[in-house]
Image 1 (cartoon, rainbow, N blue to C red):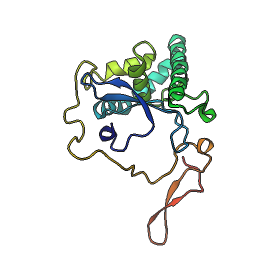
Image 2 (image 1 turned 120 degrees about the vertical axis):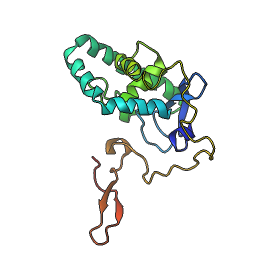
Image 3 (image 1 turned 30 degrees about the horizontal axis):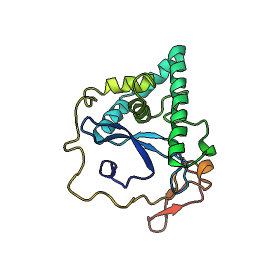
Image 4 (image 1 turned 45 degrees about the vertical axis):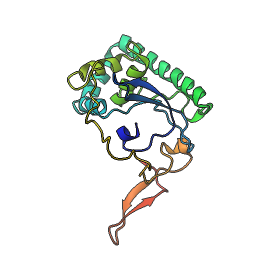
Length: 209
C-alpha cells in the first residue's frame, strides 16, 4: 500500500476492499491520526488504476450531473443521506477498533460532500467498494461508469506501481497536521512568494483556502 500511495501508510486500521489478486483497493483509516489530526475520510482508494479512473469521471463533469439529480430526485437524495449515516456508523466501528475514542471535531461529518452534494467521487467509490453494493447509490453508479478502465473481476496491478524500489519510508509532506483550523487547533499553512528574492516560505498565521 505504501508503494501504491507513494508514501508510508499511516493509521490504517484495515483493508476494506481488495483486488481479485489480494492487493489493497480501499483502506480504512482511524478517525484520529496518530499526530492528533481528525480524519473524516474513513475509506479512501489506494489502487492507482481505480483512482485514475475515478479522476477521469470527475474531470468529465460527472459530479455536476449527479448534483443536479440529487436536487431533483427525493428518492435519490434519501438514499444518499442513508449512505451518509452508514458512513458515520462505519467510522464509529473503525474508531472503536483503532482505540481512538470519540472525535468530536468531525461528529456528524462524513466525507465526499454527503449528505447534500457530491464533492469527491473517490470517497463515494471507496465506500461502495468497502461496504458493498446498495449502500451508496452514487458510488455504485460511479463504479459502473469506470468499467471501461477498471472492473472488480480483473486484476490491474501489473505495472500499476513500482515494485522494484524500496517502499517509501518517509512522508515528504512539508506540513504538520492537516485539516480545517477548527479541527486541528492551528491555522492552516499558506505559501507566499517573498518579494525580495522570490523564495517560497511557509506562513502559518493565515487561513487556508
